[in-house]
Amino acid sequence: MRGANLAALVIFVLLAATPWLAEFWGGSYLTSLVMKAMILGIAALSLDLLIGHAGMVSFGHAAFVGIGAYTTGIMITEGAPNLAHILPMTIAIAAAFALITGAISLRTSGVYFIMITLAFGQMVFFTMSSLSDYGGDDGLTLWERADAFGTGLFDSDTGLFYTILATLITVTLLLRRLIGSRFGRVLRAAKQNPTRVESMGYSVFAYRLTAYVIAGIIAALAGVLFANQAEFVSPATAAWQRSGDLIIMVVLGGMGLRHGALFGALAIVLLEEGLSTLTHDWRLIFGPMLVLMVLYTKGGIAGLLEKRGET
Amino acid sequence: MLSLVNLDKHFGALHVTDNVSLDLHPGECHALIGPNGAGKTTLIQQISGTLQPDSGQILFNGTDITALPPHRRAQAGLGRTFQITSILPEFTVLENVALAVQATQGSSFRFLRSVTGEWRINKRAYDCLALFNLADRANRPASALSHGEKRLLELAIAIAGEPKALLLDEPMAGMGKEESATLTDTLLTLKRDYPILLVEHDMDAVFALADRVSVLVYGQIVASGTPDEVRANPQARAAYLGEEAC
Image (cartoon, rainbow over all chains, first blue to last red; front, top):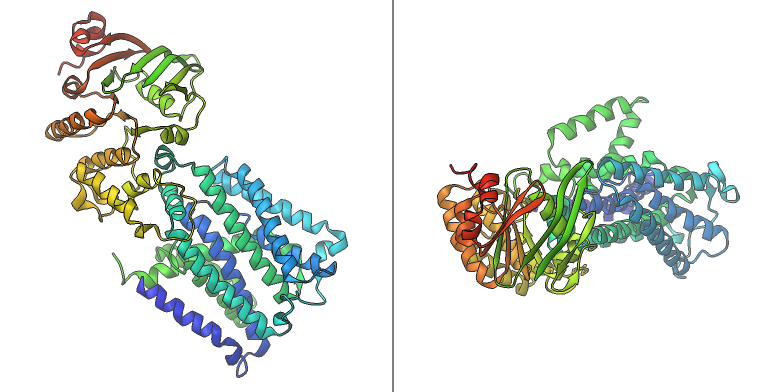
């Protein structure tokens, strides 16, 4: 365990120092890139609760990010920019959507679960594309950021940056506790052998649905941050490609392993960025790299870091 | 305790459970025997709730549980083991049992407190493991146990859930002669505390444990009674005992 924790600590310190580092190199470009990476990290962490710990491969997780982003965008546009209103609304919508689609999706498993979550994700995507009052296909530009409970925290990039970092750390700690709790144990057990867990007296369905709702809410909060960071929301936020990216982050980082999703998110964003400055056809390098990583690193990046610690 | 009333189940044209009625009384071990394909597993699945009968009723402690899902039946006190070893391979031996204990100790919709620190759960789990001489294996991954130990772990999990009755589906499956004999002794002790419905191929074990035996052939119960009565029953002999006289 030590390797991954140490790496995470170094990463958190580096992240915290980014606004300061940016004054010497990269400027606002660097801070906005790192903000994007952290937001994706939050979304990927929540997806890892489902994939890594509950064995539920959801292919529609970006829909929740989209829900958070659009709720923020629409409320700001409609003159209700206070987070005190945006957050409860986002949580309520994301929870309701997760409850309904989760209850239906969880009637299936395996490949069917992947396909049905994909279908629900696409429903959200197309719904957003058809919101002609809010930009339709083209998306919606925000003329101001949300009002952070009247503190003006989001008025500066630095304020927003540290809000995102604080959220990332909170989500990391919260999910770790969750996984080690009674609830988390049932969830991890049901991943290995649902029939056994049922026969012990647990409704696997209820636990999985709860996990689905929790993950959905966290992803939607990532969406709120995303809308504020980009000052722009578009249906692309909820597109299936984005859901796929999140899955790749989780897998590359190390499914179910400590900090795995965070490593994955940072690695992918930075690789994308680094490679695309080298060549226009960066995907030609990126693709094979992913394949090699998945083939030769069991447990992804976190697995590599922990190799010396255990087994 | 547990009563099956006129259970019926078809798989297409195949009549797998044909008007089966069966009782498990408090304090007894009732063995269900029969040749392969007689429908024992299908019957077990209907009792534990993974399969719904076409008609008939299942009563447990006087309440109708026919329509309940498996986890509700477990909550009602029906503990079970599986024909094919069914444990949580990635968990430690202790955690396997602790999860079953946890189900008896209030809600598991608790999200923040560390469960490994709940000593009440751990203590009870250790006690259950000790019953089956598995206490020294507590911190091993369950997948590292031998086959025989895994079968014992299954029993420990079932007991940890504080059941009112046990449903044991071929607990001796895959065990050597000596191991079976030891397990038979263990089950004899368990029998004092839990009524047991036992499905088993090992006739030595069946006749050592059972107070009553029912013979299932082609989905029908062809004979039922004390071990001696069943041994003497020509229909039962023809269907089962004679063929397995090895």
